[in-house]
Amino acid sequence: MYSETPTLQPIRALRKMSIFDDSQLDVLKSSTLEALEEVGIHCPSKIAMDIYAEHGGIVDFENEIVKLPPDVVLEAMSHAPRYYTMGGREEDFDLDLADNAFHIATDGTGTETIDYKTHERRASKKADVADSARVADYLSSISFYWPMVSAQDYMHSAPLHELDASFNNTLKHVQTPTVVGVKEAEYAIEMAQIIAGDEDTMRARPPLSILICTIAPLAQDKESMEAALIFAKAGIPVGFMSMALAGSTGPATLAGTIVVGDAEMVSAMVLMQMAHPGSPTYHSFMPGIMNPRTGDFHSSARDTGLLYTAGVEMAHIWGVPTLAAVGASSDHSGWDSAQGVAMALLQCAMAGAETGAGLGLRETCTLLTPEALVLDTQLVDLVRVEAAGIDLSREAIAMDVIKEIGPKSHYLSHPHTRKNLRNFEFAERGLILDTSENGQSAMKFSMEKTEWILENHHPKPLEEDKQSELKKICKAADKELVG
Image (tube, rainbow, N blue to C red; front, side, top):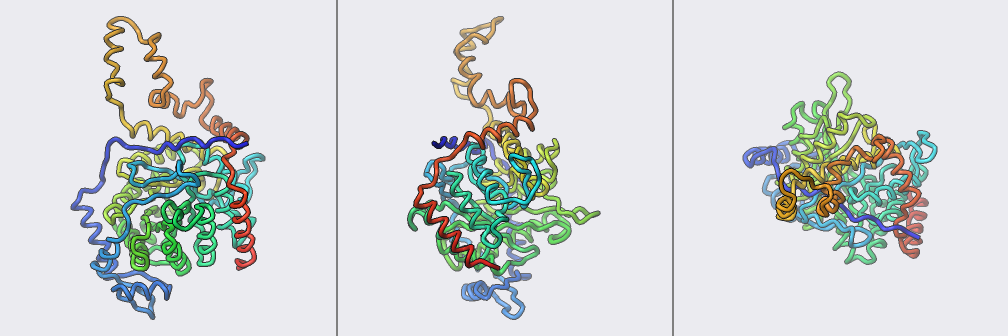
C-alpha cells in the first residue's frame, strides 16, 4: 500500500526586484563577452574544440584555448529556450518553468550521513539516497530531487545507482550533478527513457536533468563536456554551474567573480547550442568567497546571498532559466545560517528564479543529518508565505464581517474566524518555527517529523517492468564501469 505524495507548493513572489539596473546588466554582459573574446576558455576536449571551430570559434588546438567572438556567442545563445518543462514521474509533478514560480530542490552528493536510525556518523550508501528521496517526496516545499548523498557502496557506477534509488522513491523530477562521463551518460539517458516511457515523451517532459560544473577560472572538464553533449542531443536539460571562489579562482571583487563565473557557464551553453540548437539548458552560479586568513571556501547564503541573486539576473540576460543557490549551510542549525538561507530564498524568488537547490545538507554540503531537510523546508514555508504578500480581495478584507461585528465586540465566535484560522495563509504565519502546540523545538519537531515520514510515507511504486529495466542497467554499468 502506498501513500499519496502531497501537492507541490513552490514560492510565488507577488513583487519582483532587481539588484542591477539595465545599464549595469549591459556592463556585465559586455564584460563576459570581452572575456570570452580576448581571454577565452581552456577546453581539453577535441570533440568540443571541433564544434567550436566549425561554428566560428577561434581555437588554439595545441594549447586547448577557445576564444569566442561576441557575434558567435550571441547567435548561439539565441537558440537556447527561455522556458521548458522538467517532467516528474507523473504529470502532476511536472515543473513548467514559465509558470512564475520558484521551485526548490534538495542539496546533493554529500559523502557522509548521520544514520536515520542509529544516529551514528558513517559513509553514505544507496539506501540513504532512497530514504532521503522518500522524505523529499513527502515535503510539499521540495519540488524536485537531487540525490542527497553518494551511493558509495557501488563505487564507479554509483551515479547510476543514485538515479535508480531516486526514480524508485519519488514521483518528482530528478536532477543529478554526478553523471559526468560518456558511458554513464548513455546509461542515464536509457534510464530516463524507461521512466518517461518513450523518446518523444522524454523530450517533451524529461524526468531527468543534469548539472555540470565548470572549472574556475575559465576552464571546462573534458569528460563532463562530452557527456553534456550526449545529454543535449537526447533532449535532457543540461545546466552548468560555476563555483568560482572570489580571491582565489575568481578576482577579489564581487563583480570580477561574477564575470569569470558567467563566462565559464556561457561558454558551455554556447557549445550545447552550436551542436544541438534549441536544446534545453540552464545557468547556475554558486560562488564562494575565500577566507583571507585560511583560504576556506565560504559558500553559505549568509556570505554570498547577493552573488546568488546576481546569478539569477545573469541567467536571464542570456535568455535561459536559472538554478539558484539557496542553502549551502556550513554549520548545523545556527540562527545566522537560517537567516542567510531565508534571505537568499526571498531575494532569488523576487529576482524571478525558476529553480533553486541547496537544502538539507550540512558541513559545506557534505553531511546528511536526519532532521536537516525538514528543518530547512520550514524556511521555505516562511518565505513562501511572505513572498506571496497579503490578499486584498473583497473576501479577504472581510468588510461584510467588519460591518456585522461592529465596534466594541470580537470576532472569536464568527464562522469567518473559524474558517480562516485554519487556512494556510493565516496558520503558517503563526506556526512556522514554532512547530507544535506544546512548544517543542524546531529541531525536535524536525527529527520526529522525519521519523514519521520514513515510517508512514511510501510513494506510489514504479511499475515492476520499469524497476526490472533499471536494475538491468545498473548491473550492466557495474560490469562496465570498473575504473
